[in-house]
Image (cartoon, rainbow, N blue to C red):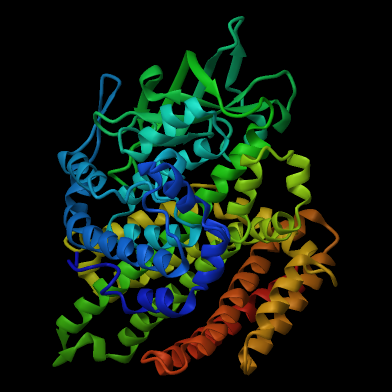
Length: 581
């Protein structure tokens, strides 16, 4: 793979950081107007709060320097062992998962940088970065290696414990993850129940001494075995009561040393990431929070975090494909010239670039929406406000509702589109791309999982389609949100207006389909129209922020090409909705 700094050498990623992110709003929402964590450090000298910024400028510089360091490490260290980790594979022997030496070595090197706990709270020893910075992190990490990116993203699930756990659990689980002494895994899926979490059968029995014992089996658990000498903490969903459905489910903290690994999956891609079958046999577990809120409260926090991470991985891998293709096409001579000068090849490269930036726009917008309420909500939780009172909070209600719509949309769109970009990367490389001699083959294999894990694309279509339709009522929150973006665009193009009309027709047409089964068959078309329209809105809005920059003219061309593509795709989708049978 190309060896360079995956942040500072990525022109468009820097454009986002310097021009397209509303840092003052994000920082104020994250840190609070009084920059409370910095005040804690001033008053106590607690080293965990030493990095907390005292003002907006300081925060931006902290984010920039962290991303430059991350880009250097993943671009010059991780990327250079990615192929070795993929080829050397994991092995399962006598109940133990054996990792390639390269994987353990790179994990220990990264731990020493101090960048690992980007989403874990400072209270637990993490960096406490906003979701927007977390999105930058995942984009850079996924370009370097998808499997290793998964390892680090999962480790940051410890932020759920620092949010809802007791002081003892924060120290015993989250703080250890922040130091890289342990990892994290999300143990939700079961052999017979994948996305159907309401029907989880793993049980947790409360003993006379108040502890719990867990029995059952979980499947497709990424990083459930830990990593070499470093164990995992498994956030385990189990049934604590006799009630069926969500109300009988709770989340438990379980150490990987207390479970059995029955085996690991042999997979198409992400070869350096273990996908385990886990067996619980009277296994000790510590309950996280309260009984009965496992699915409705704590798992929701985990899945939203992982959906956003999964979404950010899309443009991350896509950017990797773009730069590898650009290099190859400039060096590969055919018919007396570099193939980059052949119009059909040049268009494929350009398409990857504009699709990657569209995915980035949608991902960062979703991260912004999350940042606008999540830190405020956590502060309310830490102040012991009642859940009912928190849910009524206007900021939590408005932005939280938007997040519940945008997270499945962005996860769907970025995972699907990134795989199409990986397909183009293979095509640009021709026959060479179909061999394992070039990194694009691994990128293609690794990109495929993103449409499946953290909920399949079809699950996210089902979640979002109803929310889109209901959110687009005359006074719906989603309609108000879209109208707000439209007002920020100085001169909407004819293509954007056409997409707007198609989107409105699609919502009405979808609502008017009487049979639920028929609606479900065409729901993906509504999802595609919505995602493309959102990306088009964000593309045109970005142009107003880029006036006077060196990239302005190129972004105008990219935006126009993207909107033409999206309008054509949307026309095909509305045709299917209007002719649904």
